Image (cartoon, rainbow, N blue to C red; front, side, top):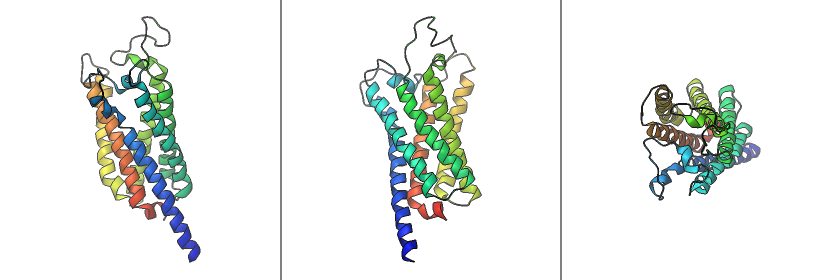
Length: 229
């Protein structure tokens, strides 16, 4: 009985650390909000967030460091989730995808967007509204978005299948739908001529990612017992 109680205490402590790491990562991933406080010449309606920490930008260190912190927190948090909590197929996929998201976010910061000279081979040809898609930064960004989408869908399905984690079933799913709508907005607009406020769409998408991370952190913190039984 003493052993079970001690084990439960350790699980609660680990759950607290995992939840804190995820929550802080979620807050750091919303560092783009600083564009409204810092003297930065950006157009939130049309500019992509990658331009905030692009090469040569005055506050690149601020936004790049925030992304690195996100990755450095989520990688051990995801590993902790795999090691501490009970293994289920969907949650295993979710934690693994979250780990990939953390690694991709670090790579995002290490491979920033850079200005392309006409004809530069590293950038390829024109790609409509997404000319930066020919840069290595595009690959890391795509991996990051795909990874957190897989994580969110996996945990959402798990919450319904296992009848647990009410926060993820309700608030988490609502945020996932919002982020998915913004992603569809961007994908459709990329194939149309003209401007469709893609900067706003991406900010909604990234904002939804931060909110979902906070929802996951809250679920781990408040419903730790459900992750282990």
